[in-house]
Length: 233
Length: 295
Figure (cartoon, each protein chain N blue to C red):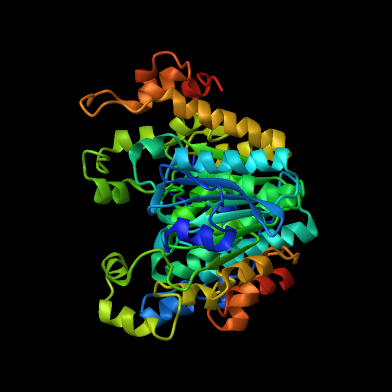
C-alpha cells in the first residue's frame, strides 16, 4: 500500500504527514490524541543518515512530548550496502536508533511498528522489531532473503527449501510466517483505525515474541530454551 | 602470548576467565541442537555454536557467552539466540557483576534466517534490559570472523567494547557489499581496505570501541577486568551526546564526487577527527595507535 493512502485511511485527508526524500514524518491527531509518526518509503535502504533522522524525531518526542505514542511506518529494502556507511559506523547508528526507541518505551511512550510495504533484515531490526509490538498489512513482505538467494548462499537445492517452507515458517519469507513465529503480533485487516486503536491501548510491554512463537507453533524452541537457561543448575 | 583470534570459543573461556571457574548452562552433553539445520540435512553442533554460563573474573562473579566462529560463522539461529536471551534474562534476575559477550558472528544464520532475525532483536531487547538495570555488558571482539550483521548492532548496544587490531566490527560484510554494488564500491580482497573500514584500529580512533588491545588472550582478560565496573546508563542526555557525535562524524566526511578515486575515505575521516599523520595509522603498532585517539 502507498504510505499516503495508508495515512489517509488512518488519519483522514488532512493528516499533515510530510515526505522528505525517503523519510516520512508527522505529528498527527488520532481520535483527538496527538501521535508522532516516523517512517520510510520507496523501499528505502537505511544508512547512517536515515537512521539518525529517525532517531532525531524519537529523541525530540521524548524531550518535548513525554508519553506521546509513536508509530513507525516501515518500508525498507534493508541496511544501506555501502562502504562509506560501514566506515561511518552504520551499526552504531542503527544501535543508536534502536536505543532511542528503547528509551522512549522505558519512559512510557507506546511504540508501535507497522510494516505497510516491505521489511528486510537490518532495516527492520532497529525499527519494528524493537517496538512494543509490530504489526503488518496482509500484502506486506518481510524477509531476510528470498528462497533462490538462500539456496545460493546455503548451497542447498531450491526445491528442497521450497518444500520445507510449506511446513516450517523459518525457511520462507512472508508476513504470515512472521506472525506464526511471534515476530509480528497480528495483521491489520479491515478497519485500520480500529486496528491502530487496539494497538495503542495500554498493554504489558514485556517481550512476548518467543512465547507467541511457541503458542502459534511457528517457533517452538526459543521460549523453552530461554526457560532452560533460567532454570539450569 | 596466545592469539585470541586463533582460539576456539571454549579455549577463550578457559584462558580468559579465572581458571576452571566456567560453569556452563545447557552444555553440549544436553545436545540442544537446531531442528532447522537437521531438517536441511546440515550438520548440527551440540551447543548450536554458543556456550553460556557463569564464571569468575578476577574473583568477581560474571555471566558469559562465547560464540564459536568455526560453526556456521557464529551465525545466530533460533536456539543460539535463545541461549543468549536466557543468559541475559538470568543476569537481570541474578545480578552478576557484569555480563561478558565474546562475540564472533556473521549475524543472522541464513539457514534459519527468519527465526534468527527475530532472535537477534530479542537479544538486543534483553541486552538493553540488563544495561538499564545497571549491570554492565562487555563485548569482546577479536575472532577471525569478526562481529557483523545484527550482532554488530547488538555489540554497539552494550556498555563497553574491547577489540583487538585484527578484530572487525561492522554491519554488512565486504563480500556482501561487493556483490551488491561491485568491486569498485568495496574490493573485499583488499585486506588493508577491509581493515581500514571495519578493523580494530579504525573503531578505536572513531570511538566505536572503548579499548584496543593486542591479539592476545591475556590482553583481553586485562581489558575485561578493567572494564568490569563500566556501567553506562542510556539516559536521554547520553543518547543526545551519541546523536551529536554521530551527526558530527557524518558531516566530517562529505561524500566526494565520483572522480575522486584514490583519495582514501578512512584516512580522510581520521584526519577530520584531528589524528596526525593519518596515512601512517595502518603501519603503526597497537600501542602507538592507542595514543592517537582524539575522541
